Length: 332
Image (cartoon, rainbow, N blue to C red; front, top):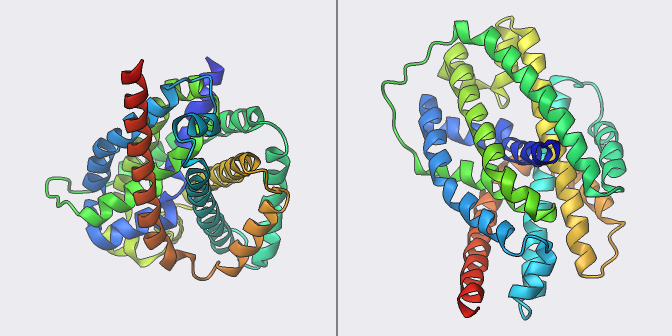
């Protein structure tokens, strides 16, 4: 049971990690106070890629994703590995930049960015130097802590929530940004035992999206749309300005957990893919570290466009994998 919950936890963190400062900010710009309905629509639409991903995990679930690539696409093996590597590194670097920026602005504003980067990189490197079971155990522990803190903060903020949900408008850009930044990273779960992942995808996905839905309603309901749009990280800045310091700190810890897990999984997944190409992988964490520092001031503007590209590539891979799986099963 705990093993399944561990992979539920990983799914949960991967879905949530790109919300604060990225997809939520994009949705606020385009949907205003109607963010909640667009998340709800994205939740429903997201079931489609989730179903396709589940089918990939269920196909010969004793095989790893590399073995499945080789079995299904022997002639396209290397290009598919490269695409998966791009998706993984993109989310890893964008999230790492967001993690550094978030921590610097909200907790360590007098600390140089590179010092914060080193502080986060050391535990990440320690975790990925072991097998994936360590990531699963760490995610499980942080999952329980995160849920506990989320419920505590929710209890404290709900009495002050005032959001009119009787009027709403849909925004395609908001829905697509949520799918691109919050659902696409789920491709990385395929490096874990597929027999476990296929049992945990749904539960982790729904818990994560519902928590983000509730977060958007509470934050906008407490602060109002004008104050929420004012800051890049409205969840914390505005809460502190209104005297909700304890809830802001709790939410900050939760978001750090989310981003830390995605960065760790991204590095691990990238190493895993590079093993398949027989390339030297020891330098990868250093490359991610250096690039993240270099693009720290530009990652926000590029995230939206790269997310679109990543979403398109992911959609193509999902469709190709599932068509090939159908053909293979039909041939039996």
